[in-house]
Amino acid sequence: MVDDLRPHDTAALPSQLRRGVLEFCVLALLRDGERYAVELVQELGSKDGLVTSEGTLYPLLSRLRKEGVVETTWRESPGGPPRRYYALTPAGRSVLDVFSAEWARFRDTVDGIIKP
Amino acid sequence: MNATKHPAVERYLRDLRAALRDMSRRQRDELVAEIASHIEQTLPAGASDAEVLMALDRMGDPEQIAGAERERLGIDEPAAGWLEWLAIPLLLIGGVVIPVVGWVIGVIFLWLSQCWTVRDKLLATLLVPGGLLPALYLSLFPSTMETCSSTTGVRHGQAVQTATRCTGGQSTAVTIALIALFVFLVVAPIFTAVRLGRRLPPPRRPQLRSRLTGPQALTLCIFGIALGGSAVWYYLSTRPPGG
Image (cartoon, rainbow over all chains, first blue to last red):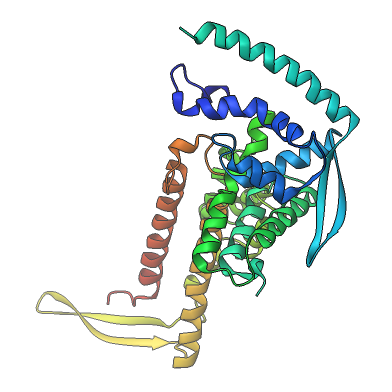
């Protein structure tokens, strides 16, 4: 899959950038409390340039669940089928803290280099 | 009406299930159920066709959904290789080229491959065992086909057919049934082979994806030659000699 990124392949750039940070964005959206899947996916989907399609988030959520950084509970919803709510686990919270600090450092470094 | 019962949604979920073929059954069921539930929750009960299509568009291409995690985790999808592209022609015409054995090798390749589901493999094995061999056999089977012999006389230095005698001819109903059977025995293995080709994972680089890839075109050529060949064979084997 390495050959996907050719030296000047700018079309692949957003997906390359997105790939590494998307899962941390999911964790960050859960920082202030639990959300159910549709809400989470629609919010991420509405952000410019973050996800190519809403569907790709479901395999990601399933992996985060397996990795133990999020946990889910089923809740009854008013007038509909039960919904799966996602919440950060303590492990997820510490992963998010590490990423946030690292991201700030990384962003400042890159900004310092690319800004004229 | 429940939004997930919409034909477009049903087709979408079926495509998604197929795209997730390399996942375990449990993972696949769970993922499909979640995406179905998302569609159901976001679409109003009486959604118009346009609303349904827009929701599916937002959800994204099933292959893209299946590819997203593979890409992120650096997992290669089970790509089609020589095993698959040999299995398809072997299943179809292998039994004709190397009687029976060629088809058996095709079946072994088919079941060794990780690109198809068990259902694909069962269908490809059972429809039709031997590939095009049974069709060829039927066209050669002497007692069911009308056999004609003609006597040729010589008149004015030229060979002229003077009499044709046909034996073993069947009633019209039997002939029609035999032709129908023959058509089935030709069409069914070709259908299975095309289906196997279509169900192979698409090539890795999406920008190179076209409706017909090189290997698929090659396989279709082989099918075409096989079909044409068997038609000619059938014609030659049923035509009265000298006629």
